[in-house]
Length: 359
Image 1 (cartoon, rainbow, N blue to C red):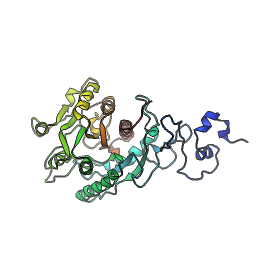
Image 2 (spheres, helix red, strand yellow; image 1 turned 90 degrees about the horizontal axis):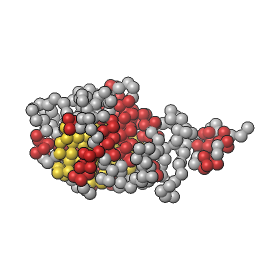
Image 3 (cartoon, rainbow, N blue to C red; image 1 turned 180 degrees about the horizontal axis):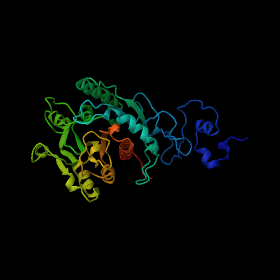
Image 4 (cartoon, one colour; image 1 turned 90 degrees about the vertical axis):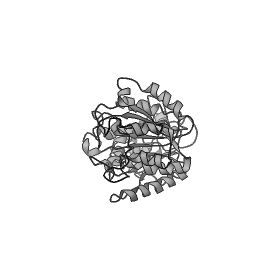
C-alpha cells in the first residue's frame, strides 16, 4: 500500500517537509518538534520559521507555542519574538492574568500563515519564534519588574522586536525601561479603557494602574508622541485625564470612537508619530466586555474588535520597536474567546512590523 502522501499532487508534495510526510504516511515521527509545512517562498530564498499548516497537521497536536511556531530559549537570530510575562501581582481587581500567555498560546493554534485582509506574509519576511516566558517572582512585584527589565535588555540587545503576551499592565513599565535604554524616549500608541497614569494606589507606586506615570517620570516616553485610545469609565475626579493632557499626550476618549471607523484617526496618529521609535501597548479591556469579558477591570461601552484591528493595522509604516497585549484573564471567559481575540491581535501586530512584506 502506498503511503498517503504519495497520492498528493506533485505541487502539494513539494511544500511538505520530510517530517510532515512521515506524519501523513502514519510512520512514527522522527521528532515531535520537526513537523513543519512550508509555503512556497515568494520573497526570498532564505528559510524562515513557518508554522505547520492545519491542512496537514492537526491543530490539537503538539506542544502549544504562539501560533505553533518553533520554540527557542533566546532571541538570538530572530527579527521578532513572542514572549510571555505571566503575572497578575499588580492587578487591582480580578486576578488571573498570570494565565494569559498560556491561554493565548493555546487559542493561537487557529492562526494561519497569511493575513487575508492585508495580504501580509510575516513568515515569508522575518524570522520569528516563541522564546517562552520571563521567570517572574509571583511573590515580589518589584523583583519581577527587575527580572522583566533584565530579560528585555537581553532580547533587545540581539536586535529582536519583542511581541509580549501579558500578564497585567504593570509589565509595560520595566519593558519600556529596557526599550528606552536602547532607543531613547519612544512614542507610545496606548489602547486601553484606562489611562494607567495613577501616582500612588494603596500606598504603592508600582501596579497596573501606574506604569505610564512612572515612564513619564523616568523620561522613557516622548510625550508629544503619545496617544491613548479608548479611555472610558468612571473616575476619581471630573477630568480623569487632565494630567495626561498636561504632559502632551493625545487622549482619545471612547466617545470619540463610537459608531465610526478609526482609520482616519490612525492616519493622524501616523503623522504624529513620524519616523521615530514607537511602542504599541494594547490592553484587552480596551474592547467592550461583550467581546472580551476575560479581563480583570472591564468597562462597558468599549471598542469593537474591528476597531482594535483598525488601530493595529493603522500602525503599519511606524518604526515599531516593541508591542504588547495585556490583561487577558482566562478564568473570566470560559469560552476562550478573549484569549483568541488576543492571539489574533498579536498576529496583527506581527504583520505591521518593519520588514514584513505584503503580497
